[in-house]
Image 1 (cartoon, one colour):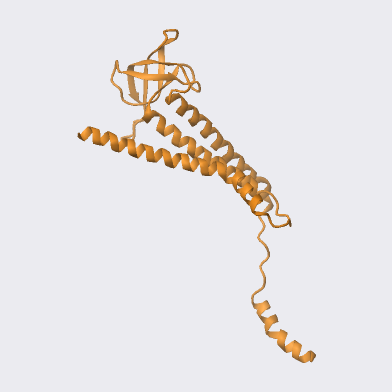
Image 2 (image 1 turned 180 degrees about the horizontal axis):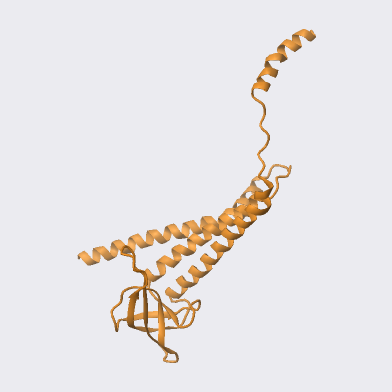
Length: 217
């Protein structure tokens, strides 16, 4: 009887020897205690800064923040002399709608190659250094909204990195409710940012199509 048991367990033992179980993969301590925290901090705070800065610029261009007024262009010049790319900066004067504020050395954020004496509807940018202003309207608002969405995506990724830093512990299987809560905490910000960026692209495409149709008609 013992001989039969040995014979029956022999093939199984050989199979186990041929396919040994792999030990669970563990991150290197240097990555866990240095690399992951640095990466998580960089992605998290980079995404947060991008979301806040771009969100503020979007609010200014949408007419929610800043003092409204008229910007008169004095001169615009290209700061990037590469043939395939142009980045313009403009100088001019600003006068608020209520007449209480004015500036004769005003800079325009994200400018285009406007001719001299061009008048633009702008708002004062609270994040700018000195007298800086942003155009208002749909097109000046779309790009910072897209960047704000991208910033939220990176913020969500950074938080996910911090979550992965936790050492695995033998716990009871999470209930469906707990799993849903974890998904919301670690991924909702990133998913929201991705949705904002996607909707922004859709709005830009529709607005561009409408502009093209109006130009052709």
